Image (cartoon, rainbow, N blue to C red; front, side):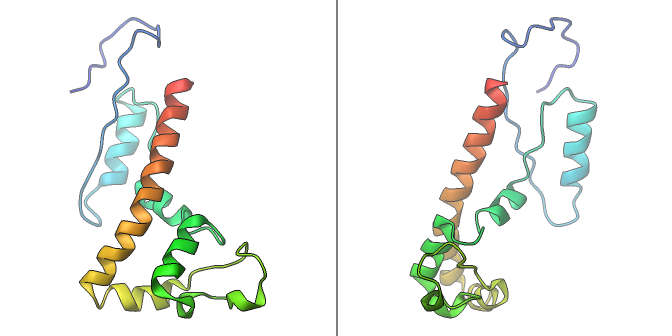
Length: 131
C-alpha cells in the first residue's frame, strides 16, 4: 500500500517501493501509472514494453542473441555486408511471423530477451534509488 500523508520530506528515511502494474492491452495501465506519478507521490513510471523494445537496438547483445537462435533470415540488413554487428537490426515482421505461429519459438524468444529487459529495469530502478 502507498501512503501519501507523510510530512517528512527526507528522502533518505522514506521507503523505496517498486510497484508493478499489469493488465491487458487497453486496460488503462499507462493512465494508472500517470496517476500514480502525478497524484500518488511515485517517483517515476518505467514502461517495461518500451524497455523491451529498446533492447532490440541495432547491434545490441539481445539482437545478436536472437539472431544466434533464429538465424540471419530475420536480419533487416545482411550481416555478411557488415563486418561488425553494429548495424545488425531485427526485421520484426519476419521474427513475428515465426514466434506468433509457434509457442515454443515465442518461449525461446522470451527466454533470450527478458533477461536483457530485467537488467535494464534493475539499472533504471538503481538509478532512481541513487537520485
